[in-house]
Each structure stands twice: as structure tokens, then as C-alpha cells.
Length: 286
Image (cartoon, rainbow, N blue to C red; front, side, top):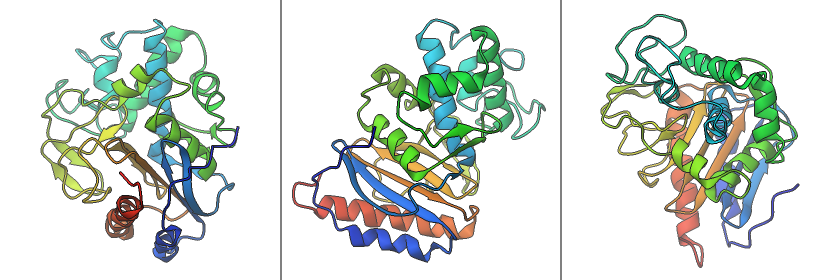
């Protein structure tokens, strides 16, 4: 089902700033609670989402919790760690292997391997391949017809800008998924933990929800200086991001084929601020 179009006044020309990112393909879109506000660029080309995959995988895992198939405090990782620890990058597992670097809930270590372990646990307890759970519980209900899991639950989703839009729209005001699941995903778990945000250095605290990063007071950060502390989402090393600012009532998504690097550290926050400025300056803006 296509997203509804918002009637919000908005200067669509601000989205042209993404043309300077140097990507071969790039699509960006702004949404509010009424639907799609504006978009620009490649909309129907499927590209890798890298770690933005974690948003979809986390929703599938939290739906398994919501349906009583697993519990957040079930043992699921290294000794002493639970599904909650794995989803919040607080299990102590290393970034991309099975090395245990810390006791649970002592530090925030961003971990692809921890996320994959969480998915394996849910798959085993549910008795269904994790990719099937993702498709049946998240992709199909949200109308993400161009998206598919082609690799690890931590980074293997491929999809279109339209799919990113559908995912972001659901996070602004949940209409299909239980609102309590979205709230759980985007609420800080194990607050106060210090850690390293990939690409942006040490953050104290490095706040994170159950799969969704929460902006809080982080600086530097990939969202804008005008984003509220309650902003949540994720970025991916493939050059894509999704954030939702519940205070502004705005979501912004970007899908590109240019690998994350120094260009994004500079370009993404500035772009986010341009979009928020345009949203606030529009008649009837937040």
C-alpha cells in the first residue's frame, strides 16, 4: 500500500543538498505523522542497508517477546547476558566476533555478533527461520515489498527508499505494529553506559534502546544539532540512515550507494539541520 501524502508545506529544494554527497545513487525523504512530505532521488532501487537492518531485526525480536515466545531476560548470550543485553549492545561481546570483552551491562560495546546471537536465539525458540519472522511480522505488514533479508540479521537487509519510508512512517505513529513494541525499542536500556559510537568516537553516555540508537546528548553525532534528545534510529556503513524525531514529528531517511566515511560525518548532520529548519519554518510546522 502506498504511503499517504502529507499536506504539510515544506521547501522541497532543501533536499537538493543530498545531490552533493557524491553517491552514484541516492534517495532521501521526509515524513511526518500524516505521511510523505517530500522525497528526491532514487526511490525504487534496492540497495544494502547495512546496520539499518538492525531496526527491522529488532522489531521482529521484540514482536517475539510481545507474543510470549521469548523473554527479554532469558539467557541468550555470554554467561550472565540476556536477550535484553544483546539487543542493547550491553552483553560484552566484541564488535564482530565471539570474543567476550566485558561483563554484561558494564560498558556499551557495539556488536554485530551480539545482534546475530540474539536473532539465532529467537529463531531457535520460535522454531521458525529468522528471515521468515522478519518477512511475516515486519516487512509484509508494513508494505515493504522491495525489502528482503539477504544476509546476517545485523546487516543483511536490502531494500528501496520506499521501504525505508514505510519503516520510518510506522515509527512516527505506529499503526500496524503495537505501539508498546516501538516504545520499548526506542527507550534507553541500561542508561549511563559509556562506549564508542562507530565513526564518531567515545560517547559518555552511549545511550541505546533495544536495537534502536537513542540520540540523547551525544556529540558529535550523525543526526543534526537541532534533533531532540529523544530522536532515535540508526545509520549503516553502506551509506544510509533513518531517524525519527518524536518531538519534531518528523522522520528523515536516506539511502545511498556511497560507503559511510568522513563525508557523511560532515554532510548528514548538516542535512538533518536543513530539513528540521525547513520543517519548523513551514506554516503550521512543529
